[in-house]
Image (cartoon, rainbow, N blue to C red; front, side, top):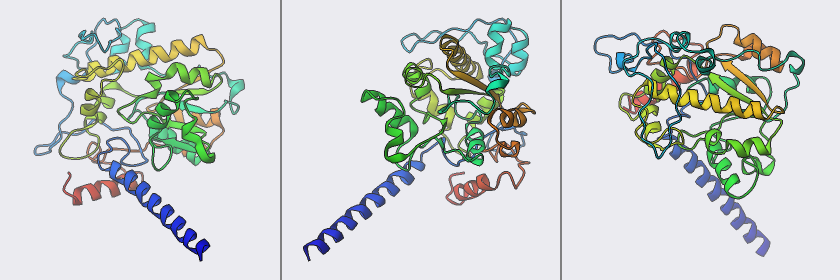
Length: 346
């Protein structure tokens, strides 16, 4: 009888814990601006139509070709961005006006991995790129290839950002608490949660703990990236992801910065330059730079990781910014969009 009671109590405790975990996970999803789906990305410029609640990127939000020198924004320094505000062209046009060393922060390099390392790149695979730059496409590619990949959440309770932060604060390796209980993860496709950015805050700890890791940087057109941030999640009323990022006082991106594509582009460029410096100083690391708009990226990823190139595709496409979204590619996004619309959130 005692054993029976103990068993019943134990089962009840497990059930309550699972209910709590389920509630914690899904209640957090309500305001989860990044992880609405497991998909991600290449939002085309929206077609502006009369009556649409969304608008195209303002003229003041585009990048203008001009001479520019990158600056590091300190959280204690309210220094104005050196990008011009009245920009009009894309990051590729801007790049053509800059020195090669400066302009390259907007362009993925395709020669960072020697061919003799193809199919032999060491794990873990750690994406240091920013949200809405193809992180979910990266995640789906490796999942399709049979690897265990985490995107935003490392388990059903914790975001990767949280367990990485807690691991470092506890004095352990950054990924230690994310992989408790045999939760072995091959790929961290998105580390940040939009609030805390491990790829910025604990980059030195990551490099020290995983000196032979394969790192990733994901690239896309800056105007399209900014437009994507402004329209995600796809709902009628904000706040959207660009609004949230402006509030979070991220290192190199203090509260209030991020009023236009110029300031987001500067943050992006500074991060790319820092990661490249770190890899240059630690030659045992490998850096893979991925341009999600490159028409050859599927073959290149397939060659490097020996995964069928059909596994590469765009995910998390915003159906509002993409009225001509292919229905097959967008089925998961469409389901989420319909749910939000039925709830009156868009």
